[in-house]
Image 1 (cartoon, one colour):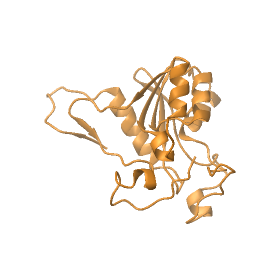
Image 2 (cartoon, rainbow, N blue to C red):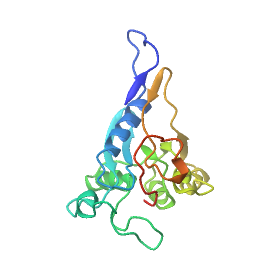
Image 3 (cartoon, rainbow, N blue to C red):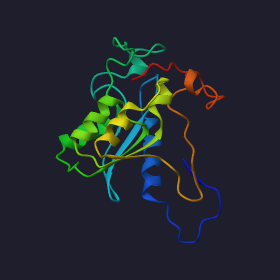
Image 4 (tube, helix red, strand yellow):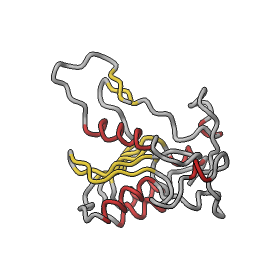
Length: 193
């Protein structure tokens, strides 16, 4: 949710970065994953190309219904074995429908993991705007996906709200790395992705 911290000028309009990140935050709330919720918006200029959120492939199952309490089975690295990431869902849907992806911007509520970063680079997405750090989420020393994308010339920025705007969004989980940031939110397992 976007809040303004002061009365805007009569004809002041929010930036598209603010609009698209707010949409990504709201899309994350659609996720059926009980471990974390991540949203993505793929856009070019002022137009939305595709949207996505993390979860299993359409038509298979919903983790919060089929695997209540524990979530879906984990793979050998402790990540969801059945889920697609928000970026993957947005990119796959755009590609499936023949949308032009090259040169686009993707807005994500969690910075891309290394696997998603490789897909973003391969699809020639030009810019990535993220809200929360994947490294902080996983408790690892660096954002490998962000580092990879920057190394190969993709513009990557952490989202900064426009002047007078506050984006209300909790991190995608309340695990050990984020316990103090999300005081008062329900405890969730931090092993997604």
